[in-house]
Amino acid sequence: MVLFVALIVLIAMTLAALALMRSVDSANIIAGNLAFQEAATHSADTGVEAATAWLQTNNTGSTLDADDSTNGYAANGSAATNSPGAGQSWDNFWSSSLATTRARQAVALDSAGNNVSYVIDRLCNNAGSKTGGASCVASPVVQAATGNAEEAGQIPLNAPSVVYYRITVRVSGPRNTVSYVQAVVSM
Image (tube, one colour):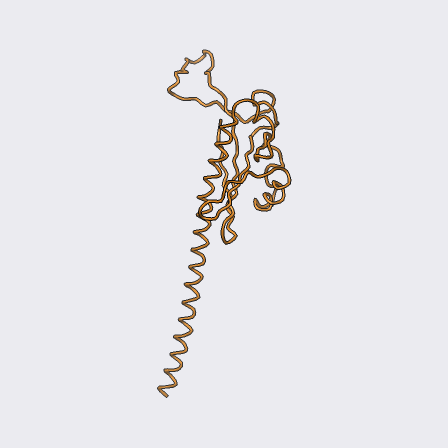
């Protein structure tokens, strides 16, 4: 009888050990997936930096007044074709719409094996000169140290206007990890 009870206890302990192993395996898989997702999000910084560098390089002249699909740039970023529709995921929008409307500028694979690509949207209602009829989203940037102070009722403050650009970065990495990051920069 004691042998029979010991056998039942041994079977119960074996089942408990199997359940514990399965639980630990699941926890490790979840932790690994979160680590890959975090690494992909960190890799998106290289895309934001590359897009910002491209904007700074091309900020003079009329380069930013027109679309440049080879560099993933849209001068009319407010167009409905530059954002996902209602109920459409970013991944679906990126693979279906952006792949057909303009090329994505790819950044070289990073050390973690993440493929980083980006698109740049100028936040204007129309293409064209930012000082002309493009209706760019621009607000003055005022720095306190510039000495633009005036008393009430006097001439308005002199502040240069800026144009905003939305940078959307897609990172695809190991284990089908996909991460999207957006940044808005002003120039």
